[in-house]
Image 1 (tube, helix red, strand yellow):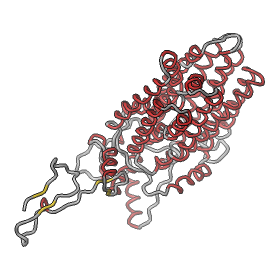
Image 2 (cartoon, rainbow, N blue to C red; image 1 turned 135 degrees about the vertical axis):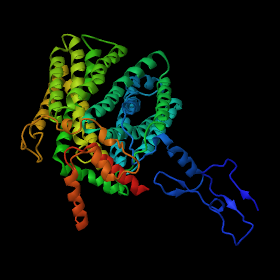
Image 3 (cartoon, rainbow, N blue to C red; image 1 turned 120 degrees about the vertical axis):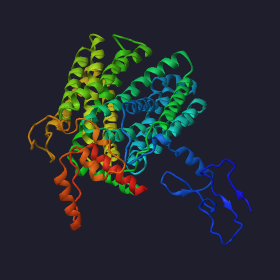
Image 4 (cartoon, one colour; image 1 turned 180 degrees about the horizontal axis):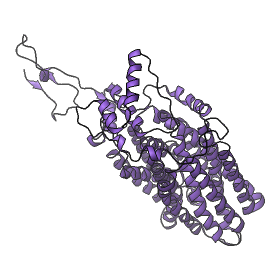
Length: 548
């Protein structure tokens, strides 16, 4: 005849059993036996020990919970945190590159067999790009990112401890599959950033991504040169868990964008997006050729510097990565001052021009003076980043609800370009040396320029320059600041009042929409080339209400 309660008074306890003295008296709400379900990532009740572990992992701190009336903003601090997370996540793919000879000695295998590690890592990364990245369109991004990072960091522990080469290679492949966190964050940033600051926000994350590629080789070479190679992976393990904790308490719980979509239907829709959007195809082809020159240059540079007339050591060659850090860090400033002000065509062409100049200088002076490759590394990396940021800014406006799938299509093309650049660069260098491989890179950049100029900035078809050549970015005039994402109104204000106060001049449009609703004939607006912060805001609100 007493109340059986959870010893901790926890609101997540499974049940509270109650016996009442008077059966005729209806029990109060606090006395009714209740089953408090534990909800998983999909919002459905679950039970058992595993469900409680799952609940603990996917629990959202109060400060990170989504409020449809006051959606979380993409602050500069969160933007930089995403960039840092990308740096030390993508670095997992490149830590092994300077260690191949050391790994061959440690595992007592041939160098040829050790060289398969980067290959299996790239294969795993390709699988993650194709099969995991599109999930960003149908699941909540916060738990998805956290689970991927936790899994990847834990796999790093196995790399620190294993004494078997087969296990080491297998763990590298598995870890690479889940090292796609940056490709989940980039579409999210493109969706959340205000239109007039989208390029700047994307540039911060892209800078972190490219920095990870270079800094991984640098840190790995230095650490392995003075300590054990296993300390490289201990360092990676610690850094990833530090970032995981920071994201756990900082990353907002953004709603799903395509609730209930079938996974296989989603994969097939990637092909539909490619057929439907000429802008996406143009960006993918440009990304293919520009990325091929990046891997071709950095691969053949090692051959040039390690042979005559330079004969540099591995450590000195690794220091050349520092030449690419400065332009990568300056990318966000250029995006803020230039890319956000003009149409992405201007930035893509500007980036390609920098790439062309840098490659020409390095190719035809590299055998004479080491200053040639250094100048090429600085100018070329700067141009490559400008082009990539502008390309991503362009594709994320194609279909806001399919940002992850659009990013998957783009990254698959970029990845294929990197593979082609590596293979072509090595083959051409073996046949004709540094000048022949560099001349091929000039041809790749030329092909990217032709693809860009075949279709104008206002063209809606596959080829042509219809719509004029006005290169000024209209988003700069329409969205001066990200204020539309903030709702500075009283709690009792209606949705119409909130929209009217944040976006003046919409009275006529609202009245027409109301008339259409009364007739039962409401048309959804077509997705334009650019999406305003208010559009994303309204979509998030409606999606959150559906979940509720």
